[in-house]
Length: 138
Image (tube, rainbow, N blue to C red):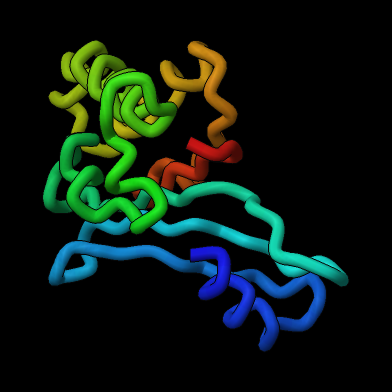
C-alpha cells in the first residue's frame, strides 16, 4: 500500500490532497483516506465516511466499503473495530431522534463519538450532508 501511495503522491504538488477509498456500487455509501502531500511525503489527515442520507443511515453499512488498509483490520483489538463498535452504540443511542430523520441520527451519533474522545469534525454543514471526518488513524 505504501508503494502505491508513494506512486500516486509523486504526481501531487506540495499541499495537494489524495483521496483514496471505496464505495458501494451506486456511490451512496463510501469511505476514503485523506492524505496531504508535504515537501517530502504523504501525511495521513483522516478518514471520511459518507452516506446519502436519503437511503437512511446505519454505521454497519460502512464496513463493507472500508479502504483496503482498514477492511482486514475489523477484528477485536484493532482501532477500526473499536471505532465501528462505538459508532454502532452511538447510533443505537441516537435512534429516538429518527422521528426527525436520518440526518439527526447521523449528527447525534457523531456528537456522541466526539464525547467519547474521537476527533471527529462536528461542522453542522458536513454532518447534515452525511459526511463524518475522523481526524485520526483508525
